[in-house]
Amino acid sequence: MEHTANTLYRSLPQVGELLDSAESAALIDAYSRDLVANAARTVLARVREEIRLGRHDTTSLQGWRAEMWRAMEQELRTNLQPSLRRVINATGVILQTNLGRAPLSKAALAQVVEVASGYCNLEIDLDTGARSRRDVHVERLILDVLALRSGAAMGSLHVKLGAAVVNNCAAATFLALNTMAEGGEVIVSRGELVEIGGGFRVPDILRKSGATLREVGTTNRTRIADYEGAITPESQLILRVHRSNFRIEGFTEQPTLHELIELGAKHNIPVFEDQGTGCVVTLSDYGVQDETSWLASCTSGAALIAASGDKLLGGPQCGLLVGDRAAIERIRKNPLFRALRVDKLTYAALQSTLLAYLAGDQESLPTIHMMRLPAAEIQRRCDVMAAALHADRIEAEVVATGSVVGGGTTPGATLPSFAVAVRHAAMSEGEIATALRHAEPPVVTRTMGGLVVLDLRTVEPADDVVLIELLRSHLGGTESIARGNAVERAHEARR
Ligand SMILES: *Cc1c(COP(=O)(O)O)cnc(C)c1O
Image (cartoon, rainbow, N blue to C red; front, side, top):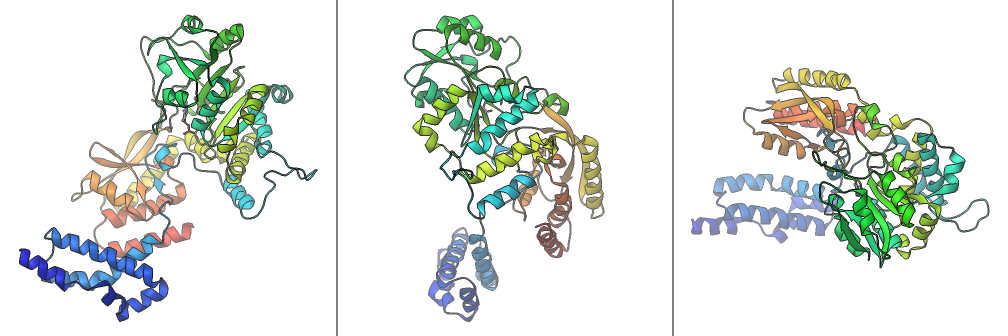
């Protein structure tokens, strides 16, 4: 055995030998000598490992040699592709942080291309030629949207409120705490000392902001009297954190935001809410129950509200701070504001997103559109897909399921939806899911009771045909290579 392995190792070509061969010349021409050498080293290291694991004999190694050039070319191609790329989201989770949260609208994308392809007036006032602030481009729009959606008079809202934008809601919260409460105490309920996701924990961010945590109440019950009892001359801020990714049910109590604001007013302590969702539509119109909204919070009289741009607002990743003018001015003066500022791509996409609400065209935002899709329409698409798969003798059925808004919003709420569930005699559900993740483009699915489930709510209708072809080539019988090519063509045509 030892002897055989050594013989096999010795029979492998050297990198230099490979590079000097005739087959290499074309590859070196297309790529470069260094890249081809790297690819050769990778492919050789892989086969050495296979030999070490006892997976080769003389015959199989001959097979490997015949395939070696193809493997090198594949390696070269993979290495020159961006690793971040589009995937098809068949999970039915509309805002999936791992899949990039809100997809941008066509208008937002076009605006990003327009603004970023050349120069733009990011910080110049085109009327006077003087330097201006980058966030003037969205402040008015944010307030316009809030006024329009809340039915408030635009003028009065603009006099009272200001808005600023940073990298994400975590940054907005950090900046708010640092600006409003550094060196002082922040009063917060024990039921809100939560982890928002991605390791963002409220107590940790509070500590880092330089504020001292003053916990009140218990995990399930906190009363307004608990807040009031904790007020000292050191109290700088009352913090409210929206429980956006979980629910506490049963014997619970929590003061309303309004009660907190009243208490704050009585003691001259501002209230800051980490609201998170950025929702300005009425979720019950979409069949989703949620007790809070960014819109309601921003017009509540709280000193400052933080929300994400890429959750229910349906825009780019950013953190939106809305609050009374004095608080927003303090935010802008904090040197950390400069460190957390966003770039022109974000402003371009955010402006277009906000403009969609102003134009009453929020359905053009994919997040809103996907929430709105009627289950019956999704079912129709599932029927078509299942029929196409049956024609190829693939085991597929249409099942009722629930889509999730997700992304740390509306915990527990589901939207009735339909999915295509697939099965394969020779593959486990894990194997099917893995094969689909390795497809081109990759497909992310859910597994449920031994089946791989594709919820079409989060799949662009134009991708249905791509999905059918991918399922055929991975779960169908023969001709898979020809079908693989058809997938590539469908994919190309889509671009
Ligand atoms: C999602 C969320 C955050 C984090 O937002 P990012 O934009 O991901 O930084 C913070 N607070 C609440 C309440 C959230 O829902």
